[in-house]
Image (cartoon, rainbow, N blue to C red):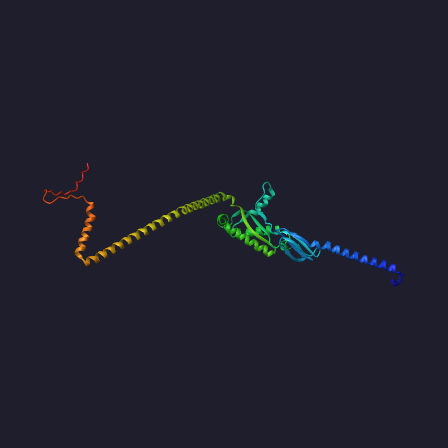
Length: 328
């Protein structure tokens, strides 16, 4: 039968009180120690390009994409999965590795597609993508790579089926890749896959075997035509600046000549008006002055013989033109 604590001796009561305090302190220290060891489990660091998908009791708790140090509730309250969200991933279709027979057969099946004019073409292409929603890519679909491969082949076959063989091989290749990328993105968004299609590239496009040589000739002719057009444009770009400069120079010279002629004509007209005004004031004097000025300008240019009147008889000389020589 337990004894009443109040009836215990003083030393016994002190001993029991100290023991109880020690037990409580040890329990608190243990609790704080466990808490101190548990809370750091919620700390983590993200490198550039990484993302942390958080689950709180099995539900989506958000996605952290900022690089650096982060702190959340520790497991098992909040579970996290770190993925490389910005990593560009590439999937090839219709391209087989050298020496792999099984892969060659699989690639041949992937590459063979039918056009709208019932021709078979072989198309090898690549798809680049990354994760825009890591939670959707991780938990909404089972295998992101398999989904991308199936959806890409479906999008490519749909786009090729709407074009002719000429369009696929030469005329609409850019439109084909753009159409496939848009269709593939729509399919993945419909699945909630959280995948962002960065681009589609055609790697190897070949015509049917029976007409491959003819198509190669057409492609070569098209390339030659493009080369000649580029050369002609280069020659035009080389010649046109010089021609424009020469035309501008001639135009400037013509304008300068026009200005000079107009200025000279204006001066002559002003001079004539001034002379006419003086003539009306003194006709005889003006007429004599004009005669003298004319003789002054004409006589220095001709050969002159001055004979004093009455000193000699001079026979007039009339210079006639020579008769043309008769051709032998």
